[in-house]
Image (cartoon, rainbow, N blue to C red; front, side, top):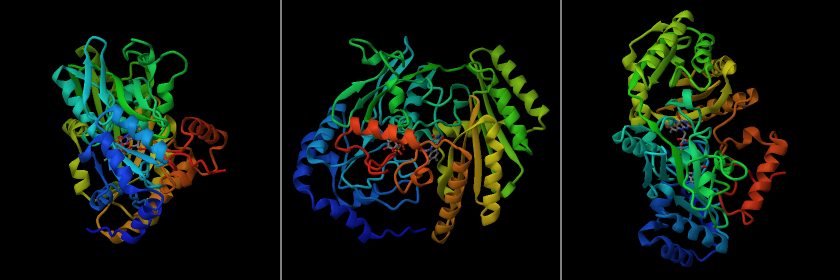
Length: 477
Ligand SMILES: Cc1cc2nc3c(=O)[nH]c(=O)nc-3n(C[C@H](O)[C@H](O)[C@H](O)COP(=O)(O)OP(=O)(O)OC[C@H]3O[C@@H](n4cnc5c(N)ncnc54)[C@H](O)[C@@H]3O)c2cc1C
């Protein structure tokens, strides 16, 4: 399959900005900061970094810069302020709502060279990693010490911890019990602010104090950056709560005919807040098999008694609400892939995600109904509605796979309609990205809340250097 780039349009973006600066001079200044091999303005690299997984128009940066340390990030930010060049920040680039595409060109900061695990403190149960470290790398290291990080996204090897937290992710893995990363597991961040200062949050901010508590002096400033889509600062290090690896685990796999019944299972699984029965609860319905919902459950416990109790409770509740028990190996396989990677989904075609976000526990069937209506209207059955539970709510998504370039426009229409209808119903998205991301669906609808984000942005980033146009546009009324 071939996707055609309009090279002329792409170059126009590059040159529109290039006219204003001495490209060579700036490149040399960047090389002085990060070293020769870590700056590129070669066409092939700019094009390679010009797309995310969304259908947005590819955007060319002027430079790809790969910092190796917090100091490198700080000096790059200072240079950007001096030169008034925008900076866009990219982790592994897997987000799918135009959240880092360099719409105003400038520097694209690739954070993946900052991938060190700085510390695993087995006493305090805290891991400190550089923001470009992936979930997979951390999990593997923790596993060797019989420790784990108990809440992570689908596709661990392909996602940086920094990118995932800055867009407030959460996945099927562990989220049923521990919620999203933003809830409790992020203990603190080290950030470079848009004006170049380095700050730490939580207990880490106190003189001579280590990161061991999310709460610090004053308000929860870690929370300010989680979900900020990178507009308030660049995360350089992350401190995370880790836990002993549970020694016991079990898997359950049930099939249901109705999402109402699945919601009842989700209700029981997350009712005892703080002692949720399921660790992960991952559900899906294939468009080609409407009316059949597969529910995969991961149960864990630090002792066999707790595990047996939870498994019994969940089995009973699934049976009570008409679930048919299937082979648990399939569930085990699903959850191990969440951590180890999902290569086959990309082999199945090009992916578009639509309607991603969170909804309250009881609202789920409403979104399924909308999705079914849309796929029936378009008659496009290569797609899946998915949901995984977190305490008292669901993260939902639709993924649509296509094979042929001719299908692309149709897929975009379907995904636009799903996004529009889901937003009308009140979904909370992971992030909204730029003008070609999900912004248009919320434009003019956020009122004073949007203005507040803009005010914080203006005060932290007076030159509008960091991620201009992402999440908020300062020129918007
Ligand atoms: C197959 C697949 C499965 C997915 N599953 C999930 C899922 O289970 N749950 C979920 O929430 N999402 C999911 N996603 C969406 C997406 O991949 C995740 O959001 C992922 O966390 C993004 O990580 P990344 O390193 O690729 O970040 P990027 O896409 O590179 O960046 C994400 C955002 O964070 C900003 N950013 C990145 N690094 C930094 C930094 N160090 N400092 C400041 N800002 C930064 C970027 O500018 C951008 O706004 C999935 C995507 C795919 C393709």
